[in-house]
Each structure stands twice: as C-alpha cells, then as structure tokens.
Image 1: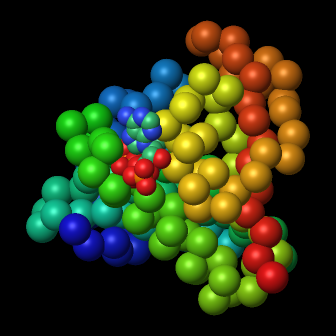
Image 2: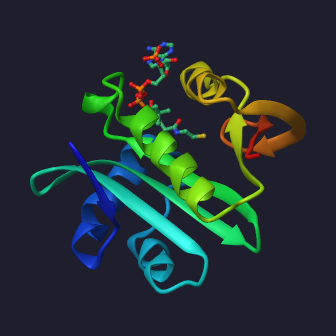
Length: 145
Ligand SMILES: CC(C)(COP(=O)(O)OP(=O)(O)OC[C@H]1O[C@@H](n2cnc3c(N)ncnc32)[C@H](O)[C@@H]1OP(=O)(O)O)[C@@H](O)C(=O)NCCC(=O)NCCS
C-alpha cells in the first residue's frame, strides 16, 4: 500500500469509495474542486492502480479539519484508515498546525476508536448534526505541541 497525493486519475475511484461509504457522498466534481483549492490536501491509499481509501484535509492558517476519510468496505479493518489518519497527523506536524479536528457520528465506534488511538479527544457535540439517520456528531480534536 502506498499513500499518494490525490490526482485527477484517482477521482472516479475516490467518488466510488464515497458512494460505498456514505449516505451523502461527495460527487466527483466536488472532489475535483479540492485539487486546486488553497489549503486543501487530499491523499489516496493505493495498491497499484487501485484506490483503497482516501483522506481529505482543509486548512486555514494553523487550523486543520478532516473533511473525509474512508476505506473501501472490502479493505476495512486492515490498517488503511489508521495509516491515512496518521499520515494526515504527520502532515499537520510538518506544517506546524495547532490542531487537527473532525466530526464523527456518535455510533461510529470503529472511527471513534481509530481517532482515540491516535490521540484525538472529544471536545464537543453537535446535536442532530447528521441526517438519514439523524444523529449527533462528536467533535474530536488532536492538538499538536
Ligand atoms: C472508519 C474507517 C475509515 C477506518 O478505516 P479502517 O481501515 O477500516 O480502520 P483500520 O483497519 O485502520 O483500524 C484502525 C482502528 O479502528 C478500530 N477498528 C477497526 N476495525 C474495527 C472493528 N471492526 N471494531 C472496532 N474497532 C475497529 C481499531 O481501533 C483499529 O485500531 P487497531 O488496529 O490499532 O486496534 C473505515 O472503517 C471506513 O471507511 N468507514 C466508513 C466511512 C467512515 O465511517 N468514515 C469516517 C467518517 S468520520
């Protein structure tokens, strides 16, 4: 498995990962817009020409936000998600970010466990943030010294 910068050639497969993983998936066009957006860093976990997962980060000044992270269902539970989030943390360190933050469904035990293991802490709750089904978002943040 390799982690590389998201490029035009990945967009179709990444959009498919979105469709397989989320009720409200990002479109290929929304993903494409990230390629040229200031402060946006998207990475793809690949095996040869196959995209297995990806992560997106948006930054403003020294604040970083994970917009998406997802792994193809057949490849989940093999350490790819952890590798992607770890990669994002390293990038934030290099860029001297103050923190990296995200929202996650309260019921998403796998993701919450992944973030907790990587030193993210719950810092707040957004009531009823998600729809289909309606659910609270936990706000989780990792601070960098
Ligand atoms: C959340 C997601 C990105 C995690 O990626 P993954 O590749 O499946 O996760 P990993 O194999 O790297 O596992 C990382 C950690 O998750 C936890 N985990 C993984 N599978 C788990 C399971 N079946 N049950 C409980 N915890 C689990 C563990 O803490 C694991 O760490 P460990 O191996 O050190 O114990 C992936 O499952 C996914 O795409 N889910 C659907 C989309 C989604 O929910 N994205 C997050 C939105 S906030």
